[in-house]
Image 1: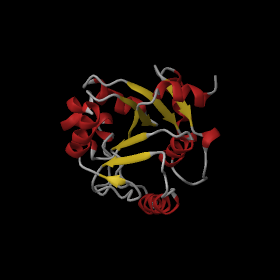
Image 2: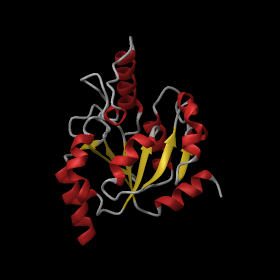
Image 3: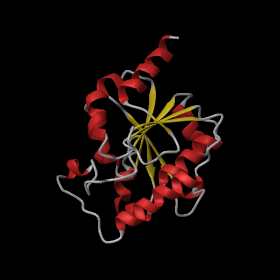
Image 4: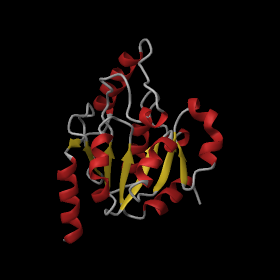
Length: 200
């Protein structure tokens, strides 16, 4: 089997839930009990060991990790130890300079994954640190030029990401996200809509 066929098997026609590390994950914790009841395939990007404790605390199993950059090769042993599918970006790097979220969403679109939902995909860190730093007990400040680079990446994401996606619905549960190319909703709206789908 190929990595792509393994991914499809893991997803198994479920909604793909991608957990990013923006500060809006604070709201995720408030709704995690309700989210745990939904039939979602849980995915995160990069340092999964910083997100997995949050999910486990609420009975959510992380199933797919996106191992995305050369900078994380120092953590090779951690990725190899992950109890799930480790999906490497390189074979599916659709656009140099775009981020891993972009690349993986393109994989979902090109393989007709029906529904994708994003959590913590804020596209900014206005306070100068990301939510996941709480797990490391430190505050990560922008280094020189990083904020400008990050803002440029988000602008390019919104500019180049496909607007027409008739077979894939992408919802961003971060109403103030700078990723404006997706529908942005609040947690209670997403949960209510998902619950209604289960009942129908």
